[in-house]
Amino acid sequence: MSIFDILGPVMVGPSSSHTAGAVRMGQIVRRLLGGEVCFARILLSGSFALTGEGHGTRQAIIAGLMGMGPDDERIPMSFELARERGMEFSFGTVALRDKHPNSAVMTVRNAGGEQVEVGASSPGGGRIRVFELDGLATSFSGEAPTLIVRSDDKPGYVSRVTGVIAAQGINMSKLRVEREERGGRSLMVIECDQRIPYKVKVAITAIEGVRKVTRLNPGEESK
Image (cartoon, rainbow, N blue to C red; front, top):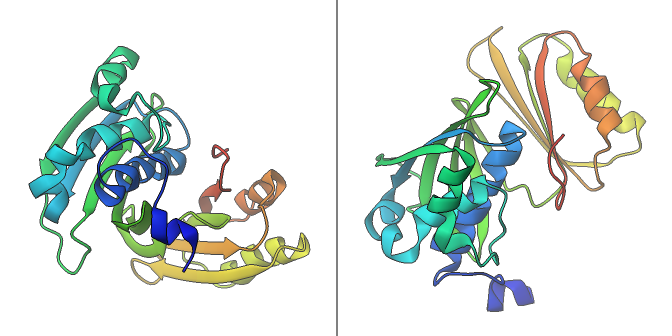
């Protein structure tokens, strides 16, 4: 157990899971989109839906979508700040089976029309876990350097992607691959021990069948 587990995160708000975790959920959705969020549809589940309003969960998610951190004093004003930026957003509820009660599904778009749909949970201590990305099951927290590769399901593409990473001397700690069907969309999530440089993204993007590559280096905006 670390000191973080005992004390929790530095944050604005009454709850590490409903407030700090909710901010970080918004942050990671923004990073998965790769830029400013212009539209957001947020469906809350479980205790997020039942008690989140009193804990500032909705304001926290919007703050995260704008790039704020859990300790940002502007979190309570996030709705007004989002509207000033021109962000359209709405909230609803959803029943998610077999998911942590502090969960949400968010559909967001940027000005260019690019869209992602993310399901994530806030299990406590300000930590989060993404359990779904664009309709495909997954599992990652974003705490470690993480590479997310959306591609067509083609023979040999896993070895080609991991070969690019290994060639840079980067050690992979976890690898998970999901697909919707044989030959259909595929989602690969690779967690690493070292920071993932931009040139790795460029090289993997050039692989035939790869649709999108996202780098999540802790403390950095995605690019």
